[in-house]
Length: 125
Image (spheres, rainbow, N blue to C red):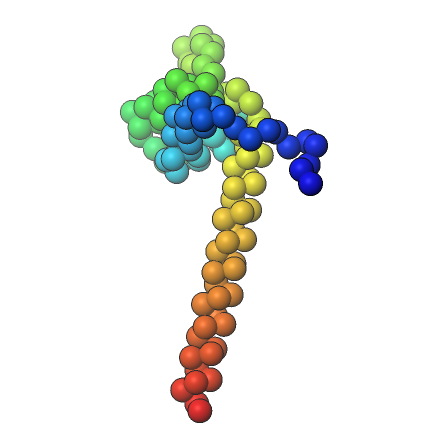
């Protein structure tokens, strides 16, 4: 039985757009770190550079990539450009993906531990 809150299965075109925009934006760990940095509110490039130990060129390139994919917005305030998340749900999605990854890694670790214990037992017999 399907969860009534769950969205309908995506169409092929929707999957292509999802991959081109969202997945491409999240494919780089630096961009993910920038998104997390923006979770607490708008930041200028200098603040992002300092917080993440990036050079300004790298930070600006990644911010432009995120902006082009509609994940962040830019607003000029005096001499600085401040970036902010378009939708806070991206952080919830990242947190969910991190939880799924942690669960998968935990399951893999349990299998490795179990396999090593079996191998040790076989060697004793």
